[in-house]
Length: 360
Image (tube, rainbow, N blue to C red; front, top):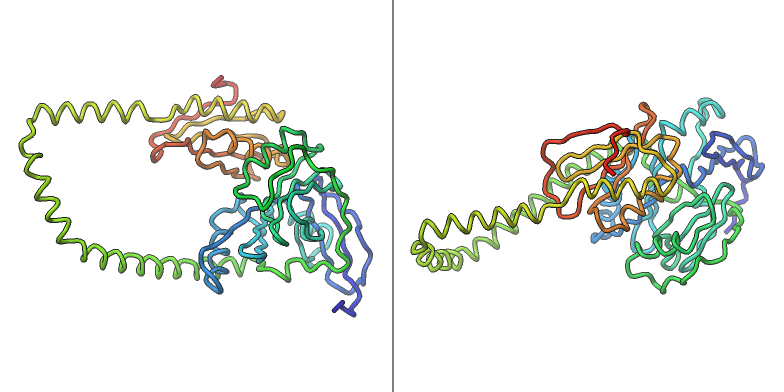
């Protein structure tokens, strides 16, 4: 049933800090500010739990995977999972304060004001294009591009999606210009993690993790107790031939194992070269580079924030990295993109180099 109340004022905040009036509304109602898509990051999370445990898991996921030091967060239930949106409050809040003072508006990504889609689509926005994948009425993948996506852009986006409901079209769909919902229900219809709620989620999350860990290890103890007799028999049977092996054979086996382990280590310089090629392909110059064991990082200017999401997706698509994560550092005016080399072990001692000392 449509609301009988007058609609609130609706504005859009661009990545340049400018506000654009989208729709006039009752001045006494709390305004809504739609954040430009390039100011936001999105992820889809589908927990194994259900009910309250699923909501708690979504909150924990949102806290653990934020790409910003001081994030604004909205977690929305959709279908069998949750859509998680983040934005950088260090960047957005000063603009909101200058515009609205202490009367904080309701804030949400502009995507949440769009009508739902179905399958694959490309949406034309005021400052770029959004590539989307929908499962039913749930948005499960979103990526932003300043220019209309090329076939290569579309292929990279489609390649990252697992088990899509329908195969991706070979070429990008024609961009759609969508209307803003007449009365968008934004943060109020999801789980908005304000700083207070985020602190509560952290405390509750710690308790939940401890409870789950206790239950897990209790189950493991029962399982190990049931297998103790079998394992002891197997150990005694294996001990006899092992004792007969000569000390020379054991030393040779250790040397072979050491050479195999050394040969199987990922090459961090090769990973750094791969990362630099991707970053430079997006027209971004690195400020600094670093290698820390199995972790490679490339630091780029903060002004490249609108291209970081596309860079991250392309880095992930190379297959060279097990995890790629952008870490904005607003105070330093930079963004550090960290990548764990696929097959790498825990990081060891690290070494950093300046941007001028290119690894290529």
